[in-house]
Amino acid sequence: MNIQNAQKAVDNWIQEHGVRYFNELTNMAQLTEEVGEVARIIARRYGEQSEKESDKDKDLGEELADVLFVVLCLANQTGIDLQEAFDKKLNIKTQRDHDRHHNNQKLK
Image 1 (cartoon, rainbow, N blue to C red):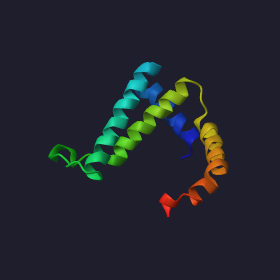
Image 2: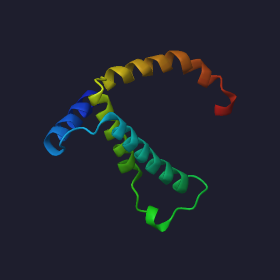
Image 3: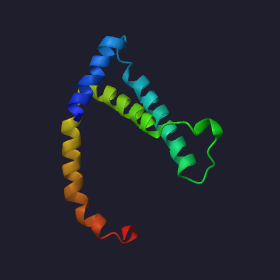
Image 4: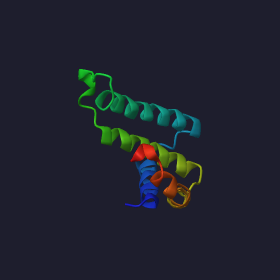
């Protein structure tokens, strides 16, 4: 599924199962909450913090999907074609960062 199809799938889900999109500020708060859940898993599973027993069953993929869902909601409700924006950003990063990363001694 490409990003455009994902945006359509989220919009269809909202139309069929949700009442409406939450407003943009509520979705921004939701996004922050979901990113926090991802950060908690990463910090405890891959970082130096110990993982609590209650966190051991948390699914990182599911939490990342929650982040993506809210990002897609925000794109839909603000009229952003995220596929177009992503393709543009990838092109910019490719041109700007190709040599920079290859020349970065910290990455060798």
